[in-house]
Each structure stands twice: as structure tokens, then as C-alpha cells.
Image (cartoon, rainbow, N blue to C red):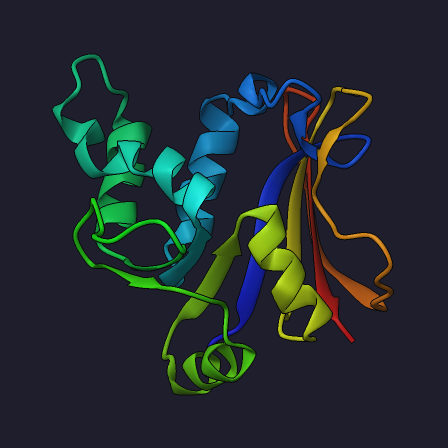
Length: 185
């Protein structure tokens, strides 16, 4: 059985985008990028909302771009080797390999995917993750806190939800970022 994991780089005040929609402040340095590479190795399926999927499409051809570091090339390979399920009412065809489109989030299907999976599953996109969080489907919350306060924007977590958590892992990075992983109780 796979765990459903919600992981993101966030600001100290809990945002994944600032008020203008920018997330350039989340750009990981080499140490944090290598950490995410290791993290992603256990993921066999990514559940994406359309907007995040469109951002992540870069990794389909990142290896063709000149000047890539070893760790970005490694991440591209990891991402390309995993399956993707994109929830969208507007996309008709996937733009990447190993990708399928679903019209709406079905909690029962996600619960089934977890039971049937030999690997962990990630969920990405704050709005999509909110459905899974409200449905009690997320097993682990993993956050790299970037040392910045952006003062508003798109929050990492939905409002009006209480979930008791247990800290299961933490790590500090040389650039001041900190990783926290919590399991839902």
C-alpha cells in the first residue's frame, strides 16, 4: 500500500505562491534540489491539478536543455519515470508520456490507488490537495520552508481543516531552509 504525500516548498508564512502568483523565491539550491530528488524516488504516481502539471511539463524535455546540472538531469529522469494523473476539465490530451487525464477528483478512486500501489503517491496543486485533505486521504505532509515571508498569496493548506499530526522527520539546510514531515494521526 502506498502513502499519499502532499509536499511543497513554502514560505515561512505558509504560501506556495506570492500575491502576484510568483513562486521564483522557491527555486531550490543544489542541496535542496538533491533532497527533493531523493524524496521523489519513492513516488510512482503524481496526482496533479492542471496548473501544476503545466508547470511540471518542463521536466519532460529538461534533459534536452543545455547547461543542466547533474542533479537537474537526475530529477528529469525521476519525473519522466513516474506516472502522472492530471485532474482537468479543460485538457483533452496529455502533453507528457506516462500521463492520463481525469475530469474530476474521485476520493474513492484515490483510496483505491493507495491500496493498490506498491509505491508512494504524491498529490500536488493546493486546490487539488485540499480535496484530498478534506477527504482524509493524505497520509504525510512534507514541507520545505523557505526562509522568506511573502505576506499573502496561495496558501499551502486549506482553511477550516483540523488534522492532528505527528512529526516524523526534520532536516535543516545550509541556506536556512528547513524540511518538516508529519504523519496524519
